Length: 353
Ligand SMILES: NC(=O)C1=CN([C@@H]2O[C@H](COP(=O)(O)OP(=O)(O)OC[C@H]3O[C@@H](n4cnc5c(N)ncnc54)[C@H](O)[C@@H]3O)[C@@H](O)[C@H]2O)[C@@H](O)CC1
Ligand SMILES: Nc1ncnc2c1ncn2[C@@H]1O[C@H](COP(=O)(O)OP(=O)(O)OP(=O)(O)O)[C@@H](O)[C@H]1O
Ligand SMILES: [Mg+2]
Image (cartoon, rainbow, N blue to C red; front, top):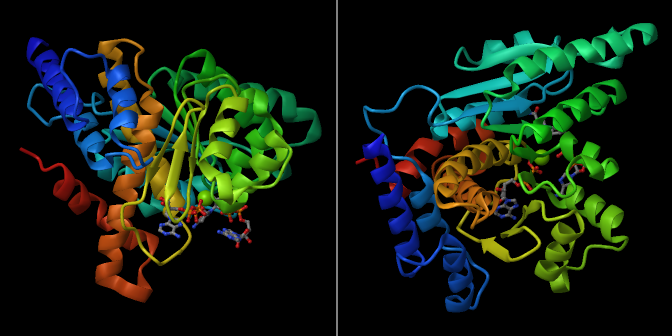
């Protein structure tokens, strides 16, 4: 235990020194200092990634490096939850679950024996109107059994937009929030949240990862205006602030991240290929790094936002892996190729000692 704690302190010191700070300052003052020292918004993403990644040693037991659950996967989409969940494992989480519809489960299981797949969700077509209430209660009870064990949920990859299913997922999110489980919300999870802001509003452990379209819908709904690229960072800050300090990672040519207090960017070279599924890799990555950052920050007190660190590290890793995959595969680069480069990217940035 002492050894583990010593490791944490060492990593915190490394983290602080990476940001050019004094070991005695709190982690909060460190990020503030970085803003002062670095006049641009660009985060020192590689240093942050290194600092929050846990060491690998023989004292650890299964589960300590993170247990992630992806809530997503329906009749149409089975790839997205798989990409997100397998990315979490490849980055270093110990266990990765997928909570999906009954129809999607055998398909997702067939992609990989590494994932723990729960066929718990139902879409309207498979439930009679009079059974909806009881089925909804059952779904929540089943998910509840697992909730306390998860270090982070990813809500939305390939979830679909069935109203009954989204009602069940709203209940899962309410429960996760009561249990203080962090949530990364992506894809159809963002469709849900844009229409039900109360699900995340004021919850600091919520991370939204919108793409171009999802961001546009959020801005229209919350700020009641159009996306303003002239003043992008300021608008992102206002958006995060208006949703009560959730963290938003706006994906694009550069990724911009804000928790309503500060804005950071990650512009590490990515890939010019825009094949579907890269956002799913990102959601699984952010979930793992957020869980790790939370472990680290927890020891120091609530002085730094682990959601910001998780987003910065996840974005950096995803972009680096995409660039390596593109170097190799060029025009034929697919999401599965990028996943294959997650390990090498991590090793380049943060080698196992
Ligand atoms: N293999 C799979 O199963 C995949 C499933 N996905 C899932 O598909 C569902 C819908 O996600 P979408 O990303 O399509 O939803 P969006 O609302 O982003 O996209 C809807 C439409 O907008 C278009 N669009 C997307 N990005 C755009 C851009 N940058 N500029 C202009 N138009 C753009 C798309 O072509 C699509 O027709 C989600 O559940 C998502 O997780 C995606 O993650 C991709 C991979
Ligand atoms: N123009 C770009 N240049 C470099 N990287 C980009 C660019 N656009 C997006 N990315 C990167 O690709 C990743 C996925 O972003 P994207 O906007 O494709 O998400 P998405 O549409 O949600 O993906 P998905 O198909 O999984 O739903 C992000 O990490 C982002 O940094
Ligand atoms: Mg997406």
